[in-house]
Image 1 (cartoon, rainbow, N blue to C red):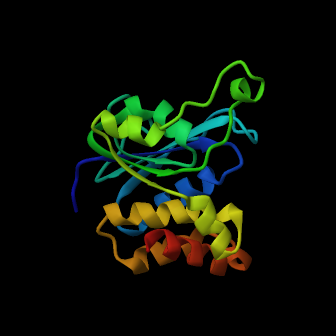
Image 2 (image 1 turned 45 degrees about the vertical axis):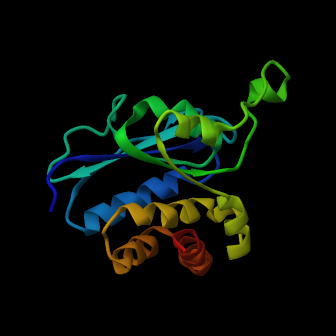
Length: 191
């Protein structure tokens, strides 16, 4: 076991399933024998507000908080949120992001415009960005609410955990009646 603490940030907009994603990652890491700390959600977790959750794992983790420049990975449910939290990513880290665009209130009211070419701008800063349309895949799997599992399927490429470990974590966290569609969404994200 690598005893160095690793840090994953999950960022997005309230109501997208970031809490379930953080619980699932926590279960995955616990199941693989790591000490895990998962933070509470920070931000406006009501539907539509910006949210961030920290997941830290290692041999011994003392704090759930990730400081700027410490995240090994950022999992983002929305492009602008990926760009907003980029300063927390460490050099050599990866951003796994949904390409979905959800206009924040200043854009909705006309006080601001949504930035264009965000993936290109992040890559231009030397950041490894793994971007895909997770909403489309979630809908193909059977529900738009499974964007979180599509993202985690994509994130699984950056770990060496066996598929069985991911399956066990999904089964522990996802309610039985939603298990099949969520496993399908995970598999589609992984593929």
